[in-house]
Every structure is written in C-alpha cells, then in structure tokens.
Length: 312
Image (cartoon, rainbow, N blue to C red; front, side, top):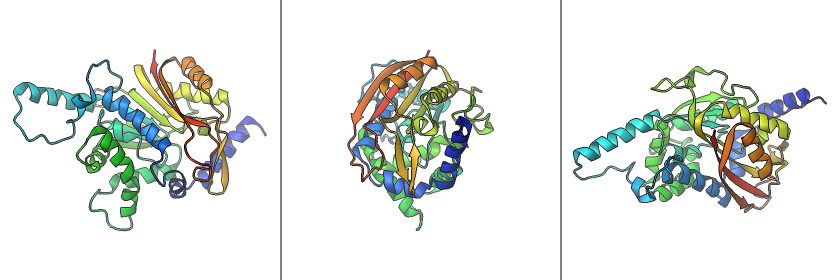
C-alpha cells in the first residue's frame, strides 16, 4: 500500500468510525491524573505565568481577574482593569485538534477572549459547537448530562484559579471561543484560509499561542509526517509566539468503537527535533508516567508529556 493510500485509509477510518460520545465515555469518563497533568500545565502557562510573558507576578496577583470585587477602586485600578480587558481582547489563541473535548480552552480563556477551536472531523466540530450553545444552569434534559460531564474538569481548574465557582469558568469559555473551524495539519495552511479565523480587532492573522493536545501523533503516520505537521502548525504562529504541545509517549495505537487507531510512536527527541526543524526553541518539558490501567484507557502509551516551545 502506498503512502497516499495509507493516508486516505486513515482519513476514512476517522470519518467513518470515530464516535465522539463513545470516545468521551471511554477516555473522559472521569478526571484522571493524566488529564489533570494536562490541565495543570495549561493553568500554569496561561494563569500563573501569564501566557509566557516575562513577569514577576505570583498566582495571587491573578486571583481576582474573573471575580466581581465589591469595593471601591481608584482611577489607576480602573485604568489597569480596562487595559487588561483590551489586552485579553487582542490576544489570539488557537487550538489544533480540539476533538470533542472542551477542556484545553479553560485556562486559555483566563488570558484571551479570542479563542479558535479546530478539528479535522465534522462530528467533533459539531459536538463542540453544541456544547458551546448550552446554558450552564438552565439546560433541559437530555442536554443537561453533557454539561455535568465536564463539571469535574471545570471544578478542578476553578480550584487552581481559586475562582468562586466553575460556573464562572464555563461562562468565560463560552464567551471566549469565537469560532470552531475545520483543520488539516498536513496542509501548509492547516486552517485552509478559513474566513472565520481571518483576523482579530488588530487585523492580524497569526496567533499568539497555539495549543495541541493528543492530536499530531494520531493525525500522522510517520515521524516525517509528524515533523511536517508541526511545521505546518507553526506557520500559524506569530514570531516569538508560543506552541504548547501535549501528547502521548511510546504510543502506537488506541482502541475506539471496536477499531484500532494508529499513532506515531513519540519520544522526547522526536518531538524536540520536529520543533527545532519548524523554527521553535523548547522552553519547558514535563513528563508523567502512565497512571491509568489499560482497561480504563485502551492505548499503549508509557507516559504523557507537556512541551512548551517558542517560535524563533
């Protein structure tokens, strides 16, 4: 079978057999330590380190961003809040390969009010769009369970932020996600010149931060294709912008809907080499050894990783 035939077969496998609800039931039935690892690192990048900006601020400096503060503030504080809101509106975040999972954007929404989600599969994009339209408190059955599914994930991040409630974060995410669009990481323009993502208030078409979690290794078939995908995604990043890559190490496949879905087997050297070839410098690397038994997560990964890189 030629490489092109293998590529078409993989696309058909996903289009015909990937079922968002079944996938979520298998891999996101609860908040496990591996997902906590991803959420905790995103929280640290966006909320604690302020999106990678050089700052001496501590966590406590950011605690009040989403709270209604019941006290008088002087003019300097009012100006500072106004400027922070303007800054949030200008920052642009893109998630590549959102899947049917709306949790990577939780911490991003503390830093940016312009987030674009993307995915190759129409069924995943529709799942995210449906979730975004649901109300947090007044959602009637049968949609209510779809909100409740994600409450533990939002509660976890709310505790990290010391927010008053997860409802604040739910509303914040829905307010911040501006579009859900198609993507294909093997194209030189993964967003295919989609007009919904064309520009923000400043007219810029590149992104300040791009997040991709458990995507690139499953969207490609070889190490060479993986490197190509990293390079294509990096083209969407502004100079000095940050790329957050999270994924699985040592993973060759996962099972879903009675089908085996392949993965490029990654290690740290492969990931960092792909980033370097794409013109990025690794800033931070973290790993967590596998925590979940295979009967709970039917994949063969040995660890999960978080990699923060900056476009040179």
